Image (cartoon, rainbow, N blue to C red; front, side, top):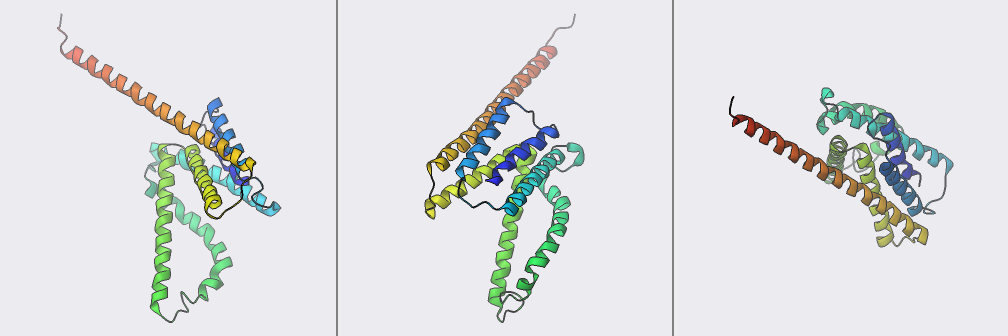
Length: 234
């Protein structure tokens, strides 16, 4: 349930950085999605104080991260419009942050694993390395896709897409694994999908209106140039 606050932090920092305007439609969309996701996951897990603080902190940091990414990628003077450039400049610092934690929690299991350094045959080793490479390629593709969405749309759109992914995951868990959902969860699912649908509809309307105004401007510009060429001098 705490994960539903991510979109609120994204909107908050986007408004602070003047990337989004606090319009009534945006506030309504965020409210519907947050409340819907909260109700959809209501009573699905037990409350834990430390976990609540960690997830809430992660949601706040995620809002700062994607807002900063949008501000950097949408400014042409930084030259970071390409997702690969952004990954090249940001991932080393993220890796340096995660490596100490990874070594602390997983170094002994990694060194003593029979599938890596203690293996007696090469086939399990190659299989493990192949799984590592597949995971790395999937993570790289996901990171490029996220940065591409932030660059060409907004961090709020990315947050809504992430929530839609979580809704699909929870729905499949209920459908395949037989997780029990109460009427409150179903109402939350409807509210969350309504907010997402409103956001998609508004994006489509804005895109259609922008294209129409652009075509009108180009038509008027071409007509003005044509009329000025054939205009008789006095």
